[in-house]
Amino acid sequence: MLSGLVIKPRNLKKSTPGCQPRPRLIAARYYFMLPRMPLAEDIVDNSHRFSAYDADSVSINEAVYRQSLVLTAGEILCPWQVSSVAELDAEALAPIFATAPAVVLLGTGERQRFPDARIFALFGEKGIGLEVMDNGALCRTFNILVAENRAVTAAVILGS
Image (tube, rainbow, N blue to C red; front, side, top):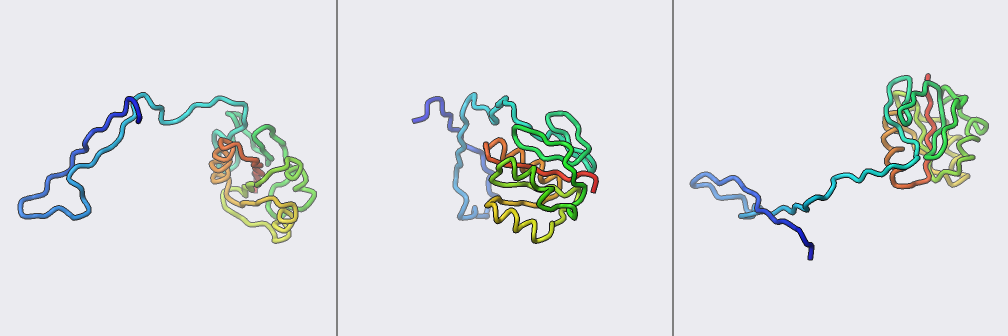
């Protein structure tokens, strides 16, 4: 079994006289407490991660960027010469495809704006997933996927 496992009963509210406890309640509940177990694992690595964002900038490992960029866990391509979703075409997407991602997160500024259907078709032809979101959602999602060692590329449009 588990050594060092502590099982403690959890106090439940007493029912008032004349009231029956709800059938789904159990007389005593237990919770498990594992001593000296960290809640989060601290792993120091050399991956690029978003540390902050606002309406016109993103911070990657505490460095602030105010121009559109393409980011993977291992490299930053800045500036990326795209300032709006309307400017996306095969030429503008070439740096993204060069990173060989499994999925691309496209951040479109403060609001989610979808590119033309032809852009989705380009990704589909190459077998690459495309997720379009606002920059805040992109930052949060990218950090999670990098922590899972996924082949993800973030394309962040700033200044739109």
